[in-house]
Length: 406
Image 1: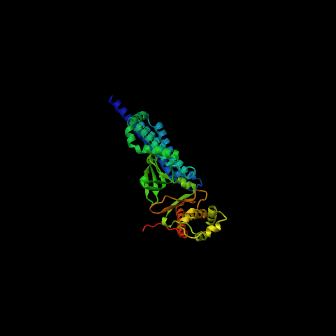
Image 2: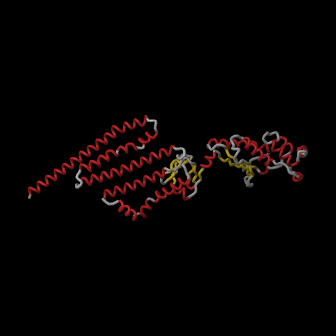
Image 3: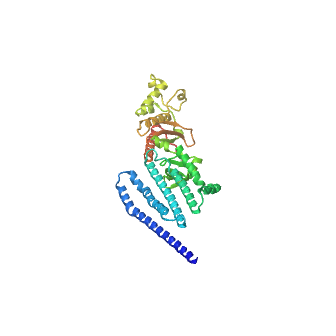
């Protein structure tokens, strides 16, 4: 009996040695396949992609999709070898089978991520979708795939069904929601931002509570990155943009015009009626002459125009209040409007006016309201400055002065 037992033990040992020998051959073969892929095939593909004119060929190599698809070959070879070479009743077969399943799981996750990267790349260069905040959605999909892969790998390591692991995770849902609260809120906010088109990459936004004022650089799963005008970077939670307010200047940029809204505070002591000599002098201004002629005709009629110009000076006399007369502030306001109408850098099809605001202790505000026909910051500031420079310099010609605190 002892001899029979010893013989059986020797046979079993020989079988195990044979199993290990065959497994070693399988591992060596897989290593050779890997070496051939990364030492021969991949360099050829990289050189070919650089010479190729197709953007798809280049991006397949750059996003590692091609290399990960090639890894299916050794993974499939390993799985097939395990099934055909090893004895299903041995522990080595079971371990090798689980390794093959885990390998397939990781490889499937990597290939899916590469496919998402390729889609995101072409989304980023498409004119219709390049500014859509889809980066966060792609990240959310990757996180979901990672969770599924992790659950399947754990099920292989613990020899438990994925359904049981899902059930255990369901019991831990409350804890997981607390841990991944920002990620969950970020995913929901990213979907809302995308569907509502609230924000795009490249938009100029302003968020006062975060001292953020600049261009959106990136929209991720949980945050929005903004480059401020002073070149500092602000990172803002995505859900904060949904639960609170912010200003998006995209409408201004899309319209191609930008509003000019500046007030000049005039010293109220300089506001008065115009004298006939001043009216005659101001009538020589080409852009103002049509207004003065129409206003004089409206006030006294065409027949009495000469009479108006011949009225004796004395703007402070009570007789001046018995009839309508031109004021220097009203005439200057008309000049401002006419000047804006004459400028090619001002959008003529948008709202354009000069208006008086409520008097203040700092003077009488005369506001210029118009739109520059550009959204470029430097050009806009130059147009706005040129307009105000001219109007401030022209103000003394109408007998007006800016208020300046002594």
